[in-house]
Length: 197
Length: 85
Image (cartoon, rainbow over all chains, first blue to last red):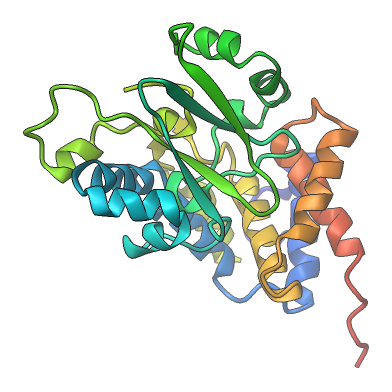
């Protein structure tokens, strides 16, 4: 690694630690050729909130799909071709006029990777993880999501087994839109539950 | 190691205004953990997750991917020594 022109002298301590890990794990045969590049490529290009947006749009236009999605999230999401890492036990929670759902992982940063990709920085930070449980209404308002007092907020703490995805409410005035157009309206934050559409 | 060069040179796409990874080492350590989960633990993520929880609890303000790195280091410590040939 020191001869590939990658300026090892400029490596930070954590970069050096990662390089040591990579060398050790490669030596033990645990990192197949091209594995790192393939994982990275998939998470950079193929796996992200656009996947979740397709799930949401389908649920908006197809009541039977929505029913399956709410009853058995993992299987319904797999119908659209999404699954894999961190997507074994998906539970989809539906926003309504009376209930607003939001997801958090208080212990680490569990997140529904197959449908949302990697979590944003703030999702992994201690303030979000602590405050979303303690004072969700206040924190949501600070994040720009102002909810009427009579809307119940349900906070879903991801666990070892379950990954949650919020099904946002379909915005009014979108009745004539196609499924791809609808998917284009769905944001990552609305599927975490820190925004409304 | 040409993969490292090409990766670090990539112009990474943004998702909702944020990069998925802030630096190439973050994507590498992310993928390394995935490799260990897959090839050393048969796809069971729980051992890594427990290490990540401990690493974050130990230093709550440490940057996330550094905690991730510490968790992977701790997990690798628990792996049996490879057979010597």
